[in-house]
Length: 302
Image (tube, rainbow, N blue to C red):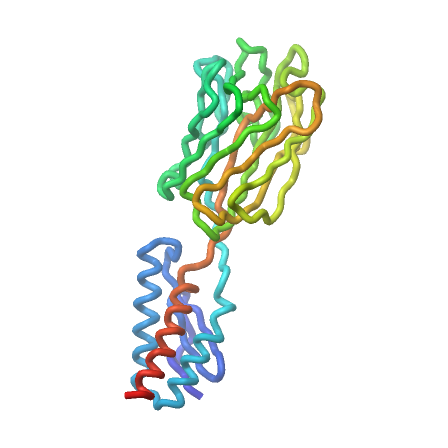
């Protein structure tokens, strides 16, 4: 049996035992960063190099094969949920509106333009993400007492569902650039018109269905178009959602209204979070497995 590291790994290490070989794999404090990846790669490479120097040819071959075959259990480690877009869509300069705490207030004119840029969270900006809403006709916005929109209370998203943007069409697109290919994202959207005079843009109800271009869809749920205000609970609102993995850095999400008795599609807020990404130490291990194979081969032919 070949053992590298006589002690158990500490909180910054993982231990892998394959084919009688035990090796502690260092884990960076922040494995998602470039610095974290470099830490894992360099530290693990040093440990493998130290081990290889004391092995004969047969032992090196075993180590190489063990590393190459034993990588799968390390793959796919999920990271904590990171919010990269939290847009509360509002009417510019209208009184009586409430911004959802921690979200970005996106203000648009009552009668606007076909495409509107959104501002990502600081996490999204750091990741280089951009986002825009594109309709086939001009966007409009409503909110506040001047537009007879009532406040919603009692939910975890009061500020989101009390004001809105709307397109007088049955679909629109949310265009992203800068998403991480292969990562897992969750997008959620709210579709309520809190008009206090009649149903407003929610007339006839209906559902909102999401689809994705240049992405693999993992799951999705239809949202409902509602005309609600006053004291409510989270369960009164049907949130549309889609979980997806980008296959391109430019991914498009399409929103389509199905049903209802008015040609319009309201949207109150948009939330994008990254929910999972392969841990960089996984990629380091794949590289080190290949490196160990090369070392064994070169020593054999030397």
